[in-house]
Amino acid sequence: MKSHPFEDFRHGQRLRETVAILAEHPGESIPQASGSASESQSIYRFWANERVKPEQILASHRPSVVARANQ
Image 1 (cartoon, rainbow, N blue to C red):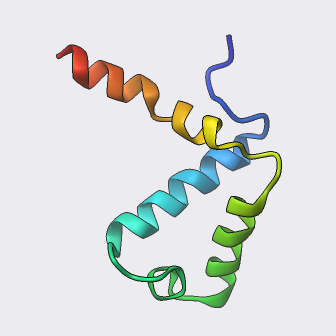
Image 2 (image 1 turned 180 degrees about the horizontal axis):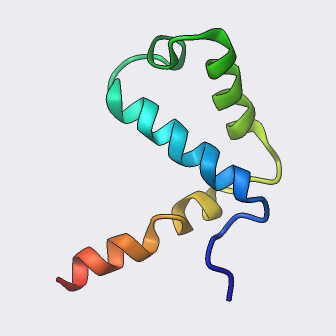
């Protein structure tokens, strides 16, 4: 079994970066939160990537949710 849900490890890295940016600026638009046009474009490209599936994004945090629920 794979230790991560993404075929390309860079997708997991991009997800972590995106979540960190959005968590620091809740309620702001992507351009406002990211602080630059290039970072905004990177986030939009990640979401539009056909190789990144919603199930993979959900699976990336499932183990920590289960661990918290078991505590």
